[in-house]
Image 1 (cartoon, rainbow, N blue to C red):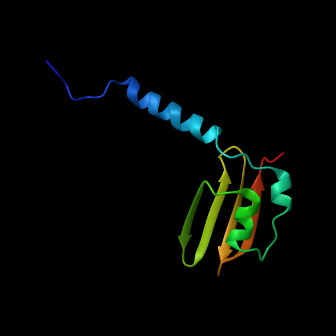
Image 2 (image 1 turned 45 degrees about the vertical axis):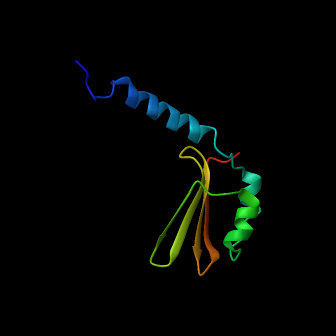
Length: 91
C-alpha cells in the first residue's frame, strides 16, 4: 500500500535547511553600515553591502534588507535614493 504523504520529518528537514541557509548568508558589519549615506543610490549601497536578502516596494518606497533576523541592515529608497538607514545587532 503506497501513500503520497510526505514523512513528518520532511518539514523539519526543510525548516532546518532554510535556517542554515539564512545563517550562512552574506554577513553584514557595522563598518559597512557606517559607509552608507542618505542620498546614495541603490547601486552605491549594493556596492558596499552586496545583494540584499530581500526587497519589497509599496507606494514608491523600496525597502531592502541585508543580513538575517538576528542582525542586519535595512535601507529605504525613494526615487532611487536612500532615505532611511537602520541597523540592528551589528558588530
